[in-house]
Length: 304
Image (cartoon, rainbow, N blue to C red):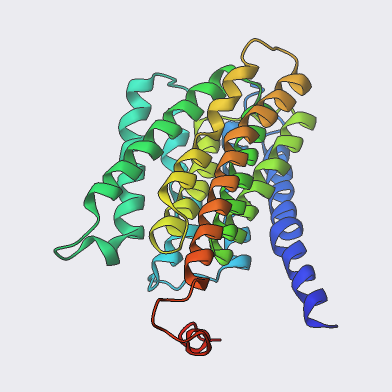
């Protein structure tokens, strides 16, 4: 098997097949255990399924985490499994006043542990971290509220479009590995949207929203602070879930889901085009010979 074919096979396995098996397997097991329950609500089952599938995807694409974590990326699959759990306690308490402090704490913990290496020292980017935290918390609260009004497949499809935009923007900016991890988030969210459409017993609650948010936010934070994803495209991509607002007047699942995914794709596409234009401009500057430097020496300076 040649290298290109092996890479395509690995991408298929880690982006689609393994996460799909984890998602459907855990969901089927959870629904089987709760078969005799009198209530049709199953938010915890989908949350656990998403958490496991997202962790599987991240581990397959990036790396298996060391315990205790050595690289800050090792926190990602741990957070994907652990952070949604406290939100299970809020499933029966839909008041925003209970959610907002917990979501703020989750964002704070995530940023503190993910960005620990760059938060120390005199020139730490505290202002940028604070701005990122504000954007992440805003998006989190919006997605949570939309999930209480929209059908489950709809909000997941919106998050899928958002993750696709963030993934492509990261790849075009030169952060390929984290871009692939964000592609895994998009695949899991898209598969979960299809699954909840076919299995209405799988309810999207705030714990399920938390599972996707943790993986999506973590990937964007890494791609921006440790990679080359600019702040502008990152912020625009994260506004994707606002597109689900367009589906609020609709009550039929399929039209609402398609509309939410399409409208959410607009900021995602904007982020991709913005990232591509910035990347092209950067490459053009790097390829422009410096005055006074012979052309034959410029290539060696660029490492060619």
